[in-house]
Length: 126
Length: 106
Image 1 (cartoon, one colour):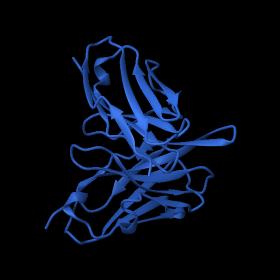
Image 2 (tube, rainbow over the protein chains, first blue to last red):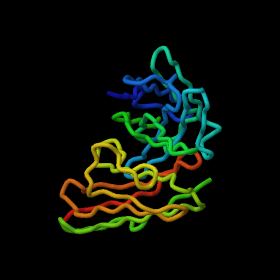
Image 3 (cartoon, rainbow over the protein chains, first blue to last red):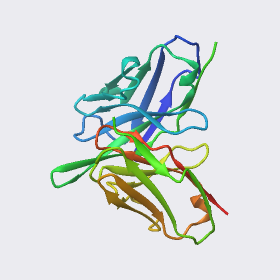
Image 4 (cartoon, each protein chain N blue to C red):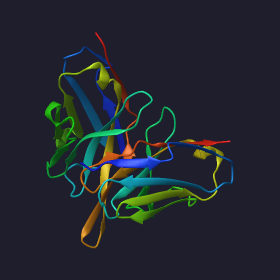
């Protein structure tokens, strides 16, 4: 059974750096085809994909936030860490991590976020 | 960047109704399209992947279709527990979510 859980501060001040940890079980991030992604959702708004990291350490970022994001993994600890620099009140949101799996059909891999953490709420305020 | 749009933004329908939600991509994405259901205060749940494949454990009243730029999610017989917001997501080039469609069951 795959589970993921986000952890980190609930309140950060503007300009500070946010560090979130996703601790998972039931899979290994050294297994081919597997990834972990981060997604956020401001109150009452839509989901926004932020970043992902794959088993081979391939990292991808949302173009609109790329300069502020860093994603890393610690395979031995079953953790993925996301840092967001220069936090602003508009970054107030629930932050989720999710397991990314691939289904192979012929020559193509179809990726989806099939298991999600419960989310952690982060408020940015002075 | 690939942009996703959804229509309608919200709808209200009765139990037993057939409901269709449309998702459009700003460029062709083949079948790299997923659908999620999110209930208030909960994490999203994967319903459909690769445009038309039903995720394990998801009721068969949910179905997906489409390819290229236009996709649909259909609920064949709406149930009270289907009240939620539904998001499409492209996985052709990293990921992008649509703005969501809120479904209210009368």
